[in-house]
Length: 172
Length: 332
Figure 1 (cartoon, each protein chain N blue to C red):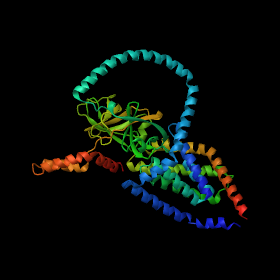
Figure 2: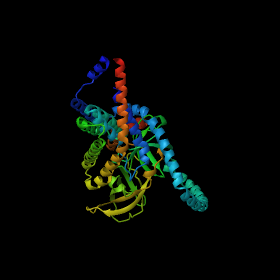
Figure 3: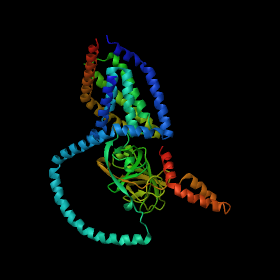
Figure 4: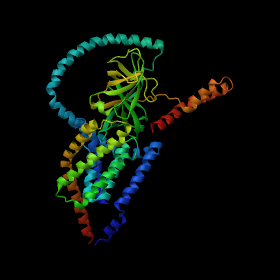
């Protein structure tokens, strides 16, 4: 329960950063996708259930504020969390490069899906343009931010684990 | 060891696959419901308004402060130079201003004469601050710090720099979401100011990187519309008030059907640096459906004439609430 609470707080902080402060540091009108970083890394660190719940919360937040209807981003983020949960079995906290790779891959899939579902279906066929000007820059920016954000998430999660274990020992 | 914790863990063991399935169905149901009705928007908008918006306000204030501080140092020299130029300009403008003040007086008199008071300079406006921008890179929407508590409502028009920004598309107690005219999924009915030809202005993510958005369906057989003509919102738009400046025509070309023209428009508003916007609290008047029926009825001569005129009187008194409902329905 406390794990979920910690993740939820991190999601809130990230969401606020992404919508407020990062919008002042846009490079070429692109913001990094911090919510996806949180979703994917909690999927990797804690398993698929945790990941998909984190994704669901992230998606709902985005939906309520910026979506045309509730549910679209919730599903996308949820599947991102669930899929990254698959990598939980082969995950080591020390292997940061692996996690960054997963974040990058998932962000690319996410961008591609958003294009297909909300642009291609409205007959915007210039995929090359959207790939080069939106998807790839976002992936690059996100993975750069992830280099700094991922260790923070890892630290917070380890701290939470320590606290939970500490209080578990008290009961003995 | 601790039975407390173990029990807690056992309580939460729904396997991931099932949870995923349940939540997916839930999201799809939510999507269907929110597309068709307006049930959840009130509840969810209030909840997130309480949890998230206060932080966004704080963070935005901090963010603006920081960027302004940073800008202060980088642009000091530039500012000095600009200051000189501007002082000169002020002098020139003062002169022009006195001239214009006279014209203004004249125009007021003329307007009184023609009783054209409902111009867009006389719409009631409320200032608001932008507190959050879209979390993704695909659409250009943002959040402002005022909502229903400040008397705003869905579909109110937003302007800045004297041009059209967009409209309120979703609202909470203390926040509202603005859908901008440059967003890829939005379209505005406009007209060319010089010739009064109607056209559709639609946002485009692809073209906006070049600073322009698209227009289409312009009928201009006699080639009177030209580059740099002003485009304003048209009278027949159902959500935007008439006569608000949208932008200037940048390119124009004939469509392959040889009947209509399309091209690009440079928006009048600088969407990159929007900090404060003005909300026009006047809503566009809309005809509600019942009234339309009545009007078609009244074409049939005499039989129902008296009755229908009575009805339309009643109707006009209820019009404001009815039109709100109609607009809400459209918005979804």
